[in-house]
Image 1 (cartoon, rainbow, N blue to C red):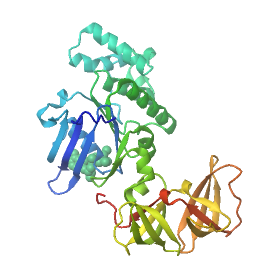
Image 2: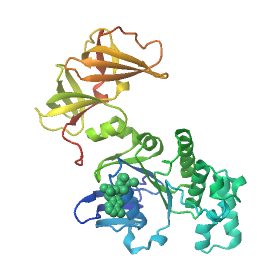
Image 3: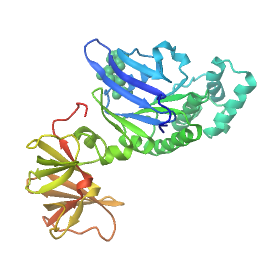
Image 4: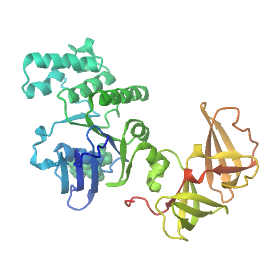
Length: 372
Ligand code: ADP
Ligand code: MG
């Protein structure tokens, strides 16, 4: 994590812009300081500019304007192969005609390491990814997950300072993907390299990263730790893209410090944390996560609450998912743990939904892709 005593960030993107066609910017104004050893994820929908940022860092694409610095040095003064960056992509890109040992030895051989050192390193990294028994096989003789572990070992074997991973688990099924997520985290903690990871999978981003930069249309919408992104989304795009949110339409009435007073379209007055709203009278969305809402049978004396009618209840196993309608027709999803407190409700039963002002955000409705 960031070392406050060390003023110089290890890796910096400063005002980075990229266009491929001299017309549209696919990366608009990318600014990011990365501390040594940090695990940073670029998360966003397809086409939002994530891979382009990796390619510029690796040196495979030019920066249209702005600067990328490693240890304070602009990278364009450093040849790609001298940047000491390891890479893992979705396609394993192993050499099919080389054995696993030869694949792992390759980055060391081109760096002209002596033969004994190469052999020792190959043994060490085969053990690290638990493939000791597979050294003499060819990539075609391994499963997808095993091949991706080889690709990972090959990206790490020359002790790079930075490892770029572009949707490295995209080709694997869910169970294998979760296993590999754990594997990557374990290696990251053990070896301490800096990771720039690209994914469009928000769960993967939340579970693996120190910080996540959420991209949309080439613009970083928010860059923060997973819990902050989830608990305090800066705008509607982030609230929607990360996890599930209820979106209650309303109007901003007043601002007091960090708290907004909001009139919901269904009639109730509620309080919410201020995200990106400023103007009293402006149309806003109050966003609340489904697990932050409780179901009350009586009207609470105070706190945020709104009357609602029960629509349906879905049994998911570990939790129960309820759907309600507010008086203006807005549908609200509530998730509760599957325990004895989960209420049984009858069709159209009237209840009260309650939630803490600190668990809700007042968000500008027009803020789709502009930076916060
Ligand atoms: P992501 O990785 O988030 O899916 P990319 O960085 O690959 O996004 O792409 C961002 C935008 O740049 C897209 O509109 C894509 O079509 C365009 N793009 C990517 N690579 C090239 C290229 N080599 N030439 C022209 N356009 C490209
Ligand atoms: Mg991509």
